[in-house]
Image (cartoon, rainbow, N blue to C red; front, side, top):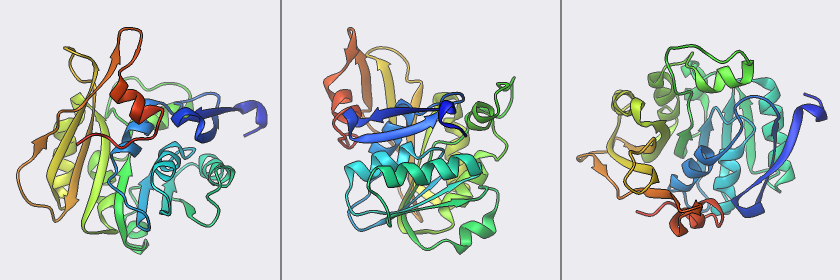
Length: 244
């Protein structure tokens, strides 16, 4: 990619500097919300699959200091950009970005043990895909949700968390994928666009070898009047963890 192909943007109220492709599916609320839901603690190792230009792991690193971050990205151009973004945000030596496909289970099994794993996978298994290659890869499945869950779960330590952000229409498939990957005790955090409206997105989280019934958290209402709600501002601007 040339400089003309990129923009420089900022997340978390300017705490994260992100260079990303001008065209394609650009990082937004989903990456920030996903990172806010990962229950990582300083000193732990986290894995992000399909990291793109790095928005998710950068937001997580800004909230939780001292993480060891392992990221996997299929597109060599985006993998290189994620590495550059990690360096630009002062994460040299703490981030390793590998080129690989989530359908490569052998790769997942070679990764070091991780305490948490997360992804913002492509949403749709069918329909008309966008013509632009980077956007198409980000929105339309080639790997199935089951592939994503298996890849993320393979290096996950016992009781480690696996987190996905999904549209409401994919929650059933997401629950089945997590269960098939050996992750249970699911937690669902809905994101309401406004009070009284159906949730369009949700964080779906489960634990390796987890037990117990699934639960639905109160969730997060994003908008009120002309702006974000105070709770959403705390997450999206100030880098707070998701409530609950």
